[in-house]
Figure: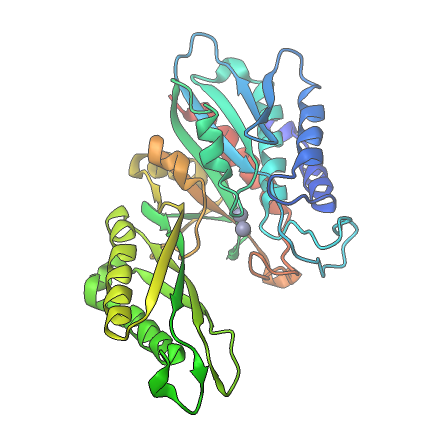
Length: 384
Ligand SMILES: [Zn+2]
Ligand SMILES: [Zn+2]
């Protein structure tokens, strides 16, 4: 029996259930980090740093004489969701839940560390494990990179994400773009308010808002090729008024998602151009603010090929024919070094495990944890 097989699946399940029971929000992953550090302290000679970019933990397993480093990343944070699952390891922290599988990501990485510590002599590269805080909107990956986790020697990066739409036993793979960029906008329009009976004396901001929303939706297919698969969503229109008062302010909010940096950079420019023309024509002042969040997540083809070889040995590949509109800040790592982000199938309809990510009933088939550990261990051992 190999050392990989000797690693008890139940131990990784235990790590995951502990994290699940004690979830912490973005940038508050203090106890989570403590639990990881306590685990790491069991290994004599294992190098690690804590408190990196907040509560991040960085661990190095060095191969004798190696100059290259492979980076593996797990995110640490949970979501502001009240858990509805009735399980023994249900969240003990009210209103907080690991509903995106980050508990599993950390547990898997701990399993990989344990396994590779027992066979570090077989590694041809160093492996750096990054436990990253604040994935859910806190910009944790970018902060870890700023803190220097890529160093001079990291040449490649890999991460997994639990994915309930894919059955346990299968791994979602895709070359090129696998997830979208995400940027958010807030458009604030100001005009003359007044009585609903005298619209000619006001800016009729609700009408202006309707023109702007229509225009933004027609802008995407006008300006971007259908093959770009770009998306602009208006998610809120708030005129803060009542049925006989014309407002003085209207705020429109939404998000923009793209699979290329080309489309990502141009979308806010086109959007503001349209907003500017419409507002100028209708005598309304405006402010268009954009928060750039995560870039598109682009998988390196050669890295996907390497992972696919491993996948065939312990699971079945699930080839995604289209990228996903959701976003992931692992994209920041992928901007710097050739990277692969794979989806670890964790759904199981027969066991009733089929709720989506971020659902208050999200759960995983824990058999997927073992597959995740074995896959990353083998990937690291193969990597040259
Ligand atoms: Zn999430
Ligand atoms: Zn996630």
